[in-house]
Image 1 (cartoon, rainbow over the protein chains, first blue to last red):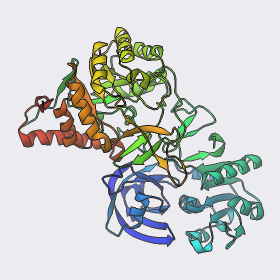
Image 2 (image 1 turned 45 degrees about the vertical axis):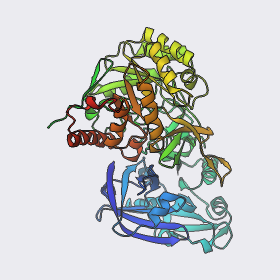
Image 3 (image 1 turned 135 degrees about the vertical axis):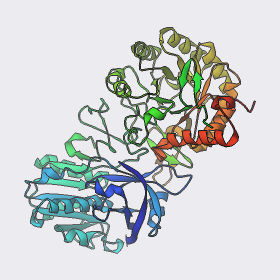
Image 4 (image 1 turned 180 degrees about the horizontal axis):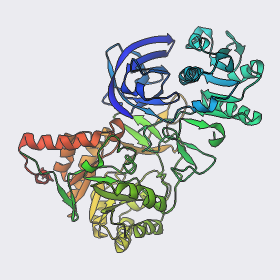
Length: 264
Length: 303
């Protein structure tokens, strides 16, 4: 893991409350899709780093990209950053998506709810790099509605078949990503998902019912990000080999879990 | 001028007065990538119980102004795994190992203490009678002076290593608790554990932490901790290890001037995984700058 001050090379607004910030960091050379970084604030009173998923990395330019929603002090500060500003970055952390497990799959389904999309953008680009054709990948993206901004939609469309859903019916299927899957997706033999807990529960139920392997990315409040504090656990179906109880650390054993392994 | 940073606590020599506060550093494994454990005065392990503990539901942590709250609930893999894995890992490092021991009942503490008796890698035991996040035991022993003295004396009968009793700040008279631990035979006292606290998410109309209450730590509690270290170190003869919101060498010096023989860094490890090395350097710099030849000269120097 890298622990350093990383410099912002680009920051832009993608939609209301959604930003894309690019950092120059050594983490770019070693990170994987599905991993995250802990980002420090510049404040003396906000001392915990914020876990933010990596939405893209370029080992050549040495940059990683973070796409996030502003929810509190840390993300708001990040959203106001300018080229040349620096932030403490610790990472890459976590296990990442098992890209290799998709190699022989014909119908790979990516399910993104809202701000769950960014790590899946990194994933879809890695799948393409592995030689997986766009016809084998469907990305279901759920948004609140067109007026709130369809962030990252165009970038997904460059990489895969895209199915949209929206809460207000302004774009794609009116309803949730599960409604869109029900209407538009006929086949899947591998699922990768990231989004709100309710959506991940539905994806898990769908995957179990259809017998499809599914890898879901979880989030939780974190303090250390390195596996020491035990703040960010998820209940597990079996006894975890590190904790020796039915808890796995989301920051270390996760954030990506095979859906049937976690009790969500 | 080279500064002598060594300190002595209950007959154990520490190369410098800096260690981690239990629970913020695992057993050092996860942080060894960022901090050379050989440079620390000691590694204090996360609390270990006789059997594995699951801990509390999530969310277990919340950020607060200049600090954080936690209610982990002392999740740990139990003494068997701890000895096989964590202590074995620590074999390779040249630093003191202090094992933090937790339990619900007296027998559980004694089981762990006995299991560690023949472990040469363990220099001291720290007894957690002050965790605010477990329902029974734990803090109950640390908030009643009679119970504290009793459990201290029972542990002392079984312990092979010097015993540090870790005090809770959630009491009316911290000096009385220090005297009770000393009367029970404690070889040293550490304080403070976290302050019991609450945070409410007003938009969700719910507690920020699933346990409702959690322990507050970080710089927000530092002045409380300094005052309590002062009170206890003036009430007892045994050495005191001070902690609560230490972020720098200057903070550590403040605790030592208040009466601490050594200090622990807690929440700040999360802020900066290399924090303790900076605290050690900061202590050395302070001593050089102010003409202190040996850091133990300043212990309790403010009277």
